[in-house]
Amino acid sequence: MYDLVQRKQLKSTRQSVGLVADETQRQARRADVALENLEMRLESLITANEAMWQLLCETTGLTDAHLAHRFSELDRSDGREDGKKQVRANPCTCGAMVNARLTNCQFCGAPAPDRSFFDTI
Ligand SMILES: [Zn+2]
Image 1 (cartoon, rainbow, N blue to C red):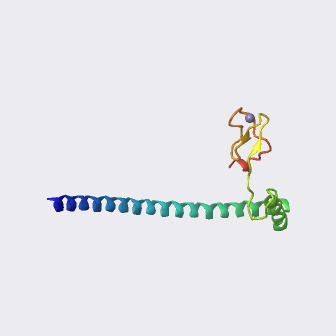
Image 2: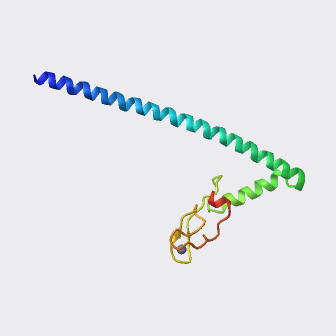
Image 3: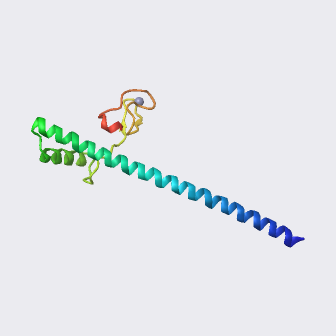
């Protein structure tokens, strides 16, 4: 009798493990698809940026050297030269630290200090 109970519990456990494994595989597939979509969007955004930059160069006389210089300035503005601009939390007039991605203080509603449009993206 005890053996039958153990076999039934073992079968139930195997089924549960199988269900978890199936769900894990589904989640992994969804993550792969989401990653592929993000990569496609990133490639499209890079191409759109390049197209806009070329139009700006053609109409304003700006060059790649201008862009590289400004990129380097922005990169170094957070204190690290690592190819990206890290947006940090800043203190609000109320004394709270305002989350880097917020346009207004999450406590008092005052506009976040020193935020550009791109800092909020
Ligand atoms: Zn505030």
